[in-house]
Amino acid sequence: MQEGFKGFKLKIARSLRAELFMIICLSGIIPCVILSLALLHNYERQAINSRIKLVQNQCLVIADHLFSAGFPDATDNEIANSELAQLSNLYDGRVLIINSDLKIVKDTYNLGEGKYMISDDVARGLSGESTGKYDKEDHYIETVTPIMNSDSEPVGVMLTSVSTAETDSILNNSRRLSTLVIMALIAVVLGIAFYVAARITEQFRRLSSSVENIREGFGLDEEISIIPYKETEQINESFRQVLTRMKNLDDSRSEFVANVSHELKTPITSVKVLAESLLAQPEVPNEIYREFMEDISVEVDREDRIINDLLSLVKMDRAGANLQIEKCDIEQMIGKVIKRLSPIADKEHVELVYEVVRHVEAEIDETKLSLAITNIIENGIKYNHEGGRVTVTLDSEPMMFVITVEDTGMGIPEEDLPNIYERFYRVDKSHSRSIGGTGLGLAIAKGSVLMHKGVIKAESRVGEGSRFEIRIPISYIVPAGDQVFESRESDPHE
Ligand code: ADP
Image (tube, rainbow, N blue to C red; front, top):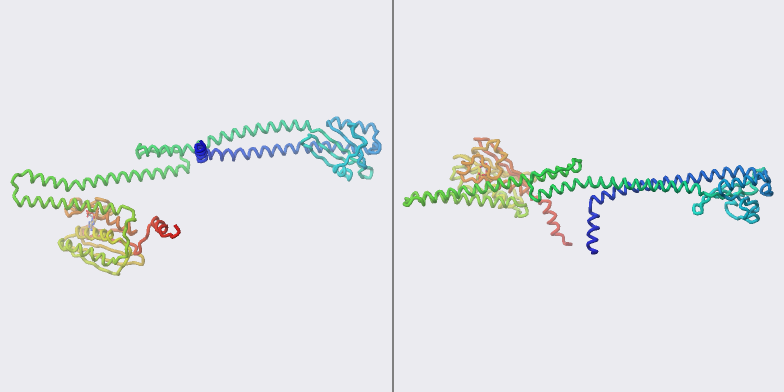
């Protein structure tokens, strides 16, 4: 039960809609309430102050008359007494006249005469100061007004207590009105907060429902309908790009599978046709039999080559994690490749030249880079003509080493150059097939060079030849993700 409650609380706290709602509510309601209370307080203070001022002014006028009427020594002047009675009635209050001995000489309630009144305010009044204060709890105002003689010296004080019942009832009305205004404002803010939070989070709901539709398999053509705010439009755009990428990957995967199937099927079909035509003839002369079996052997070799190339390509496609990086003598590595390819070059009557401008030692995966260089040099031999030449050069720059393979072969048309690294791309399909090409050699070479964080580029002229250039860092550049992994592994504290 407790667990369930906790889970519920967590869900509310994590809801963007609830959070937005709360933020808008608080930022709307708190200032409204503070402003209303401040205005009300200010109005109250002004109302009370003006009431005190009014009473003080009247008391000043009467205090003036009192001394002329003999107060505080004599308190029997009728005019003065009636003025005091009028003041008392008008404000529903009580007036005390206190002489300089702090004795009450006149009380409009006739209760305190003859008694003594000792208080700070009276003492201040007797030193000539007028004071006024508001007692909120008992709802009255008390003012002290000095009674001055002809030399402007205080001879007594007039202590007036006035009820604030009337002012309080006006203030109560104001408080009620302001409470109503605050409630109305809170209702409006709640409404606005609910609407805004719902409108903003609706965009995310639509986005997630679009993503869900795609996940459920409604197709990659799904359009997302979000109101084009600047912020949501960016999410929209990123999402569209991810979709396009997924679609391209999906397309290229399908195309690759179709190409692989086709390439693998071709030699098998040939084998089948050859075998069937042999079987169809009851008596096959030995030499025909041999010829067909040789053709079958060529097709099987071809199938084998395609499968090997496909396996190499898959290895190149994987992340650089399975590279076996070691310090290697590049001059020797290329030497070995050339030695392996020499018989083919001799057979094709192509001269194979190797020039080393600078000796290089570099950190590479020897097997994978050898494969790349083999494919490029082999192409130079395959797409050449009798008496042609393939020149391999090794040079180095401060950070990179450079291998160039230049041939005097048939060349590659300019419009085909950007596509030669694509899998199964061949400039001349029938020619490539007839000389044993699989259309995967350069794709493998490029994959290997990229794994070494290098670059490969080709220049060519039809009828004159081609030039391939590979540049690879001498020190292997560890990918960022691997660096973190390595340093974590070697951290002795972990
Ligand atoms: P393949 O196995 O068919 O040689 P590649 O991927 O190695 O496949 O090469 C792709 C295509 O690029 C080849 O079919 C060929 O048409 C062209 N090509 C590659 N290298 C050369 C070259 N040195 N001279 C002329 N054409 C080349």
